Amino acid sequence: MLWHHGVNNGRLTPSEFVRVTSTNAAQIFNIYPRKGFVGVGADADIVVWDPEATRTISVKTHHQKVDYNIFEGMKVKGVPSYTLSQGKVVWANGKLDVVEGAGRYVDRPPFPISYEAVSKMNQARTPRAVVRSAP
Image (spheres, rainbow, N blue to C red):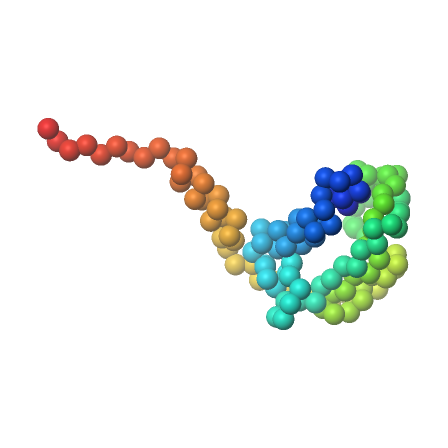
């Protein structure tokens, strides 16, 4: 949806799309740079995107344990063609190929950087008591 309505309509650049869906999300969940970053020490989780491919969203083709999709029947342009997880191809041209139990727990320490930013913003907005000396 973000690619279809964001990048295709000029509201986002492809780089902003990557930042919003990967880097920023990983930072919010306090798992950056292990996730949301391509480099030494990061997990090898990568999506190869085909900006010209189209698909129709349907509950019949999604891989979720939910029997509805709010975007049911919508045709979108721009879809993932390959997904690599831990360096292995797990999605290729519409076919899911995963092994149950292959996932790993990702530790998420409390208080990510976004918490610090919100905390500082709230402190700046809080009126401070005025201290006066006795007459």
